[in-house]
Structure formats: C-alpha cells, structure tokens
Length: 347
Ligand code: KG4
Ligand code: ZN
Image (cartoon, rainbow, N blue to C red; front, top):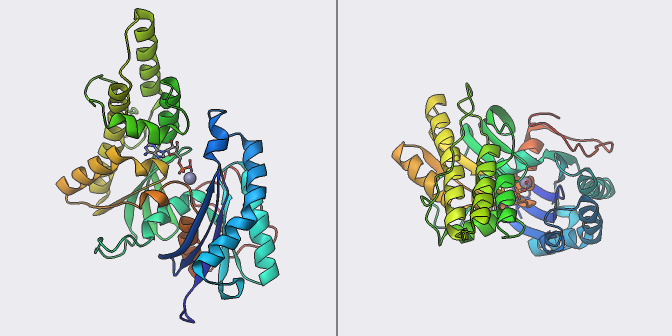
C-alpha cells in the first residue's frame, strides 16, 4: 500500500442490501461485500422496511469485518469512513450511519456522508475488467440514473456536482419493472426476471404507448405504460386468451428502453457532451445496455456503464463517491443523521 493512497471503508444500507467495501483512490475496488435480503422480502412481494432494518443490524458487523479482511487491510490503514445517509428507508439508513459513526469515532477517522444516487453515478468510476482499455471516465458527462426509486437524467458537471435536466413524473423505471413483473407472476425483484423472460420474447409483439411529457423533452412517465400493460392482461384474462409472458416482457421492456435511450442520447447531443453513462439497478438491464451502446455509437457519443454488480446497490460505489467528496473536503460530524428524502446536491 502506497502511503499516499486514500483508502475508503464504505457502508451502504439504504434499502435491502447490507454492504461494505474498501476502495483505493476512488477507482480500485479492494473488496465488495454484499449481504442481500432479497430472498427474505420475496415472500412479501417487496421490501418490508421493519424487516430490512433488523436484518441490517444482524449483518452489518460481519459484512464490514469481511470487507476489511478481503481487502487485507485493518482499520488503521483506512483514510476515511464513507456511508450512505440518504435517500432511502430511514430505519435501514440509520443502521449504516450509526455503524459508520461508531467506527470512525473509535478509529479516529474522518466521516464522509454520501448521497445514495451520487454513489450510483460514481459506480462508473470503478475500474472494469482488463478488456476495457478506455481511459477512466471523468466529468463532465451526461448520466441516466435508473433505479428502483429514481429516474433522473443529469449532467455531471464535476465530481459530486449535478444539474438535473430530466426526471420521472410518476413511477421510477425500476418500479415499473417490478410492478409489471408482479402482475404477470414473475415475482420480486421484477427487473432481472423481466430481463430474463424478455430474451425469449418478441419486442414488437404488443404495441405499448410511448409516453411523452408535454413541454418537457427530458422528463419521463411510466405510469401510462404500466396501466397499458395491466389493461392488456385484464382484457386477455376476460377474453380467456393465453398471455405470452416472454412477448409481454419483451414488448414492455422495449417501450421503457426506447424512452430511456432516446431522451438520454438527445440530451447528450443537445447539451453538447460526448460521454454518456448509465447508473442504478436498471442499468444492468441487457436490452438497455445493448440499445444504449448502439445509439451512442450511431451518434458519436462514448458510452460508459458499470459492471452489473456495481449497478444494483453496493458499497463500492459509495466508496468511489466518498473518495471524491473527501478530496473536496467534505466531512460530517458525529451528529450526522439519516435523511430519507435527501435531495441530489444537498448536504
Ligand atoms: O439501484 P437499485 O439496486 O436500488 C435502488 O436504489 O432503488 O435498483 C433496484 C431496481 C429494482 O427495481 C430492480 O427490479 C431493478 O433495479 N433492476 C432491473 C434489473 N436488475 C435490477 N431492472 C431491469 N433489468 C434488470 N436486469
Ligand atoms: Zn440504489
């Protein structure tokens, strides 16, 4: 370990993943440990906040111990502790925040609170496999953030500096995936299940509406599409017709992907940026990645995307964001609290 290296121990517990990671100089993942609660919440068809908090408490110590061990470092080697303090489920966030404060206080290390979405964006800074020879992504660039709770189109002007140029008016993209999956009995979480089912389906089998938001070229709306899918299912049931789940999944996914890709690429061109990144759980969607790669290539825009494991919730992305915040001088006090509705760009 070089003495100038900055090592962040990062903690993430905003939803149903208890995660810890050690990241070197904001780019290199030394360890990335995730204890997922998905199986636990599946029986309820979604995340149960109370259960999530309890599980975080049970898991957090072992996840952190394991992250340090896998990185082969001790707390002494750590430069600062980074933690997600919002947005998310308040009881879930509190577990990570309390733990981070205790560790930082005990080890006398600086504490850096991180915005969860800034973390998702920073997943694009993490080094990928050796096959990717492109230079590291640096701001400015346009980023499409698509997760279970957020759908934002932003210009990343600098590390941790965002200008929001579009957002969803109703459901988040991931939420739409989850609701459609539930309606056709694919289970929770719906995104990966729809992605999988769609591979065997025809994306042009069913014509679903492409919603545009009047007067806001970069805003999204997915509730109309979701209703159209639910109506389609109800009509088919009433008529006694059999539904092809792969065709429905592929057609729905195609409508979402078209909306996301067209706006993101248009934004990059109109705002004059030649780099476009995607982030958040839905960024691991195979159809979105393929369509975005194609559209970017056709428009002379360089396309960046995190590895799938860094798209869904993890602590390595929080470590990357915390590194750049640390470099800017961001420090939080022992009074840091969980902020469930923290806005992007707020401190
Ligand atoms: O970023 P994330 O892990 O958590 C939030 O911060 O919300 O995103 C979770 C969301 C869920 O809605 C999940 O269904 C969706 O990301 N997702 C996907 C895929 N993998 C996860 N959606 C579409 N295709 C996927 N392959
Ligand atoms: Zn997330």
